Length: 353
Image 1: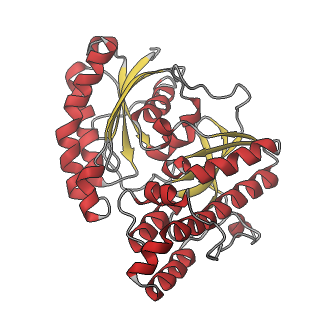
Image 2: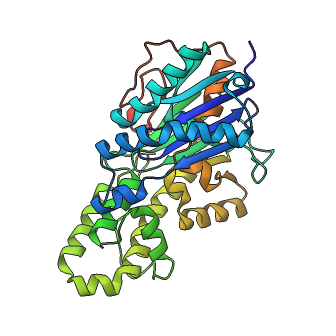
């Protein structure tokens, strides 16, 4: 059976997203419900609140997207859903909903790794976006978000090797915790980026851990600790006055490490096709630095914001490729907090020495 169109669901964290995706990556429709207002008072994502809001939003979003596309379930060939990694309570809502639809409609379904979705997001297309024609396998991908910061060698579809990762905090997590320190509000990463627009990137010197070492490993805990020490020495009035400069300096330290490791990975593997994806790829300074790489002769693709943050379209594209290879999930498909061992190969330079 050839799968031409799937309905896809993503509920791995706090965004409820539904998409209709074709096998060539065309996104017919995507609707996403944000929970920023619900989590903002707590300064971060509260798992119980996230899962509860998914259960409220998901079915109405599915109904909405079918009406927008003017189709019915009969026009859909199958279903795809994020079933790993993520918050278990959030994943359960998406997985159980898709299981019920697949069973009742007698249509195939498949569970998709959230990270695989991010790695393949550049291949999505719609009326306003299409990946450059010169993007092809193999490529190096930097996936950066609140829960993950890793470098991947993408040799082909379903052939992914982790070649570098963080030893501790993810870049997005560092942004969020720093935002709490300077009382920037939630969502932290976006607010730090906004404040940094009018700040002096050189005013405060923050550490760039492992940036010059002979590996593709990253570390952001030292940066976070340095920021905490500086924050503890400043009064609330000083922090408020210096907030923009603090944000700009902190952001520059994170971006320096990410770009440095991406370039090193490119050099090691002799691959100039690069992809930056995940929620942190929405950062404006990271995008500026990516443009500098393009001017230096690299091919760098960063999907538009709607396909960088958590979204169902990327899950739909990854899932429909698996379905067309004859892979399906049965009703025993469960949600998993972590990736499965078979999802990615691992080849870290530090382990090869």
